[in-house]
Image 1 (tube, helix red, strand yellow):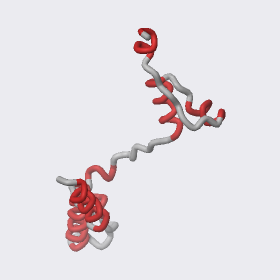
Image 2 (image 1 turned 180 degrees about the vertical axis):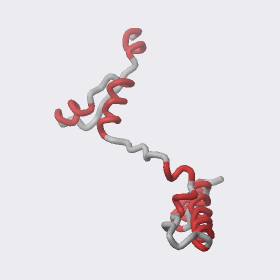
Image 3 (image 1 turned 90 degrees about the vertical axis):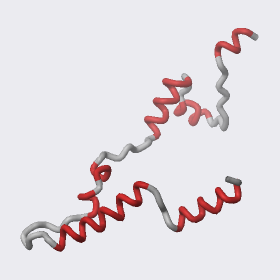
Image 4 (image 1 turned 30 degrees about the vertical axis):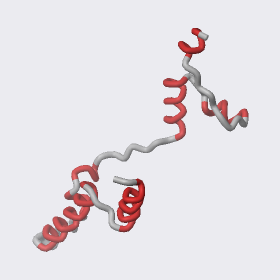
Length: 101
């Protein structure tokens, strides 16, 4: 696939999303319509998310604190300290390669 074709697919996806998650949402909508057509009057209406298994999973949110914790754990850098110092770039060197030079 060329980069131009990939660009076209990205543009098409932004207009008409496709894939498993969108399919689940569409089928959840159909299932909720069918279930609501057959529910009792005293039963609350169903929503599409009631028929989508992953819709009940807690959303994983990427927060600044978790990104900073990863940076400290993996790279040994403190992002909050770097932000406070006003530096624009961070250079990470491999300690093994620095000791051999």
